[in-house]
Every structure is written in C-alpha cells, then in structure tokens.
Image 1 (cartoon, rainbow, N blue to C red):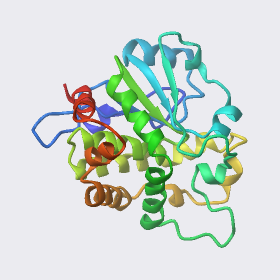
Image 2: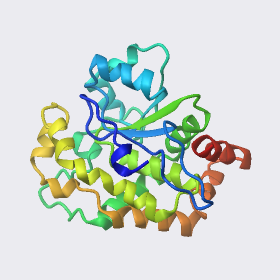
Image 3: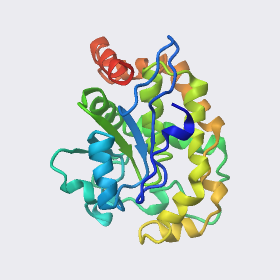
Length: 258
C-alpha cells in the first residue's frame, strides 16, 4: 500500500490515513485497517460515518484531546454508533483547563521561542514524561481491538504522531519509515489549519502564527525515536517500564502485523 493509497479521503477530515502497508524490519508489513491516525472527527458526514464503520471496520476510537477540548467541542457523530467503543486518554493532566495554545503547542506570549525541531521534540517527549499512563492505555486499546482503531487529537499531528510512532516502533517498523509517515502530515497542513480556524477553541491561537510553525519536521520524530531508543531500548523497553509484559508487547505487535 503506497502513501497515496493510505490516505482516507472523507468529507469531514483532512488528515486521516492508514498505517497499513508500512514495512517491518523482519520483512513483514503492518496490516491494513488495524491502526489509523486522524485529525478531529467532529465533522464527519453520515456517509463518512458509514465508511468508517462499514468499509474501514473501525471498532475503537482513541481520543487524545484534553478534557477542555472534548467538553467544548461536544460529542461527534461517531458517539452515536453503538458498535464503536470510545476511549478518552488525554495527554494533559486530568481536570485542568487547557487552552488552545497549550493544545496546539502555541506559546502564549509574544516572546515565543522558535518552534524548530528541538522545540517540537521536547514538546513530544513531554507527553511521555507527563502522561505515560494515557499513552500506555492508548496502545493497549490498539493491541486489544477487534477491528480498526482510530487514534486522533485535533490536528492528527503532535499527540497522535507520538502515540502512533510508539505503536509502529513496537511493531518493528524501521525508524526512517516512521519518520517519513509522520512527515506526511505536512502535505495536508494547510487544510488542517483551515479546518481548525473557524472553531472557537482554536481559531485565535492559529491566526497568530504561520503555517510553517505547525509544519511537521522529520528531524523532530527522528529525535524522539533516537531518545526513546537510547533511554529505554525503544518503544518495547518504554512499555516494559510502564508495566507491560512480554505477552502484552507481543499482542500489540501481532495485532498490527498479522
């Protein structure tokens, strides 16, 4: 499955794609319709919903947004589908108000730091240190799903990118392939921002920055993967520190690759 084939074209999202077809180091591949990544699912049309359920075979939704985002946006159309199980695993601390600036990693003061690869790498690694429970829980959903799992946040770039990268690393996908997959979001960054701009929660924060500030940089993901490898022995080592057994890790790997 090529990068073009992995994009899922729906009316209500602009950054949904399937991880299926990505190669693994042992010569295998990630299976289609096991792990999908996406931007916000609030705008799905009735036809989109049917496609998600009937064609993609989605059984589980992992929502990485903050409590503030979920309560402000309200339930999306997939919440009304009885066959789907929704899992909310925020990458922010529970119960604390989260601003759009925090959710989108937009510095709230005019003397903002340059948002280069180092900025984003530190931001993503912060998810691992502050909400390892949520990341571990999200990956557990993927490992136990009976159908496809959609992992999403607001843009489908930062929080989603971190969780999906760990899943793919655990499945044995080479780092350069994970980096390339992460960077694909850059092809849709203008459309992603255009989707979020009209929303009350995100619009003002996004209007005060450039598109390039939000564009994913390959070196950002490379730094994350290198750091997780050097400090924990890769995603499997990180999961072991979160209490995962060898059987748990094998379940995740097999779910994605067999």
